[in-house]
Image (cartoon, rainbow, N blue to C red; front, top):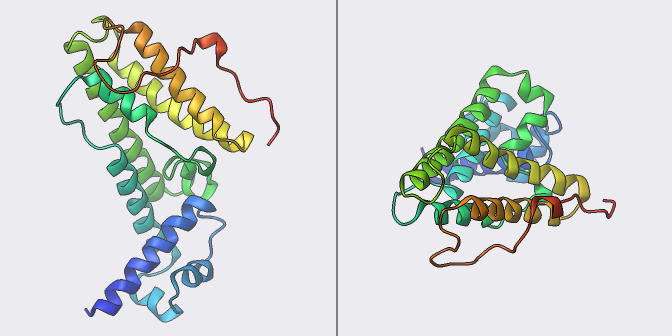
Length: 216
């Protein structure tokens, strides 16, 4: 396989990955993908049987990107600091989650293969949160009676909810408020009342967290 052919396959996957994030599967046509990738119909059907096979590869690419942004915990350093750093990592709230947005596409939800990719991605991410929470408990940073699975699910829900609110309001503020609020709650629950290093989230209380009033 020549380098040019390899490049065209990569461009097709990259273009479809971006269009899935921007528009979703149902609203993306093969013509849209070919135009964005700068390739002809012959290249598309040389590499893939059709839109579905290309979308599956593109979804896997989007999942890989999301996983790279939230890698497997290394076990180095305080686990609670790692949790807070991951929560505070910049996220484009109004663009939505590369993976989470797929759950809003009816064609994806109806397709076992594509839905399985999304479901597995969330299982993997939640498992990483759970390992971090468990480590924080073992390190004495969080109460030992805390349910690690429940908190892991909550952390995932806070981030996904932040995306939904940011898109609904057309503003980054709801995402930032959600993750900073979660950090404040973790710090309040922590047996260590201050981070040993790094930024400290603002003193936000649950009753202060509310959707932005400006209409999108």
